[in-house]
Amino acid sequence: MSAKTKFPVGVEAIAAKGWLSAHKWLIARRLSQTLFLAIFLVGPWFGWRIVDGTLAGSRTLNILPLTDPFVALQGIVAGHWPELTALIGALIVLAAYALIGGRMYCSWVCPINPVTDTAHWLHEKLDIPKGWQPKRHTRLWLLAMVLIVSALTGTIAWEVVNPITILHRGLVFGMGAAWGVVIAVFLFDLVVARRGWCGHLCPVGAFYGLVRAKPLLRVSAPNRAACDDCMDCFAVCPENHVITPALRGKGNDTPLILARDCTNCGRCIDVCSVDVFTFTHRFNDRLSVSNSDAANKAA
Image 1 (tube, rainbow, N blue to C red):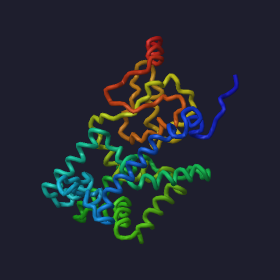
Image 2: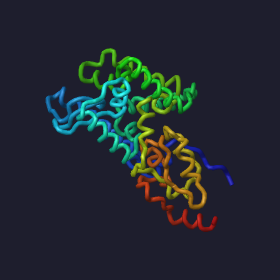
Image 3: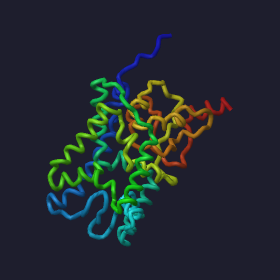
Image 4: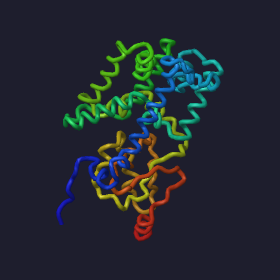
């Protein structure tokens, strides 16, 4: 029997499901990222005061305070206890991400994500070597360093160099030097470390990865028996080590992807031509009928 022909990543999914279905979660993420960016920018651009502020701290409709909990934490260790409204805002955001999954911020909200995704796409198109790959726990060390620097300097240290904040300010006041930061992140992912920024360095992503609690929204592989080992899901996943336990599980092992690094981006769902993956909730650990039969036979 001849080996399965290997097509470029995503080609089989497009052939089986059509272009739109093979990109639906990518489109949804881009719309979400654009919406979050737009609601912050329509105020300074058009005078429509829906949300005042940035992702670091804002007030919606002049009522609802929202604060990045990582910013609030830096302020606390720097010796600046936030005002009650800012603290309430941080707790609201913290609770929301604990409920839906902390690293959804990275794939559904962060405006730097399209920059790094574009860099990765071009990296693949140009067939650039993988390059230097820092350890994934490097971002945890950087997170700790940010908090230490904040404590020693009495400042919210990361906001001085945070590409997200710099991009926000640039879009409001003019990009200028902000282009340098955005281009630096792009070039880092393009030629230095594949998916290096979001996957290995960003302390914001590291922080939200720790905000896991018991998130309700999860990606699952209930139809893993149908997997044809095309490896496309591993190729597109920015944190592909999270896939193996769910996809390669034996018997009644949970098909849920429970790792804290999963960003719930839906890339694996889009690119799978045999519909192995789906979005579900964390209490739904059922396998498909064919998988259940296989598990029972194995038992």
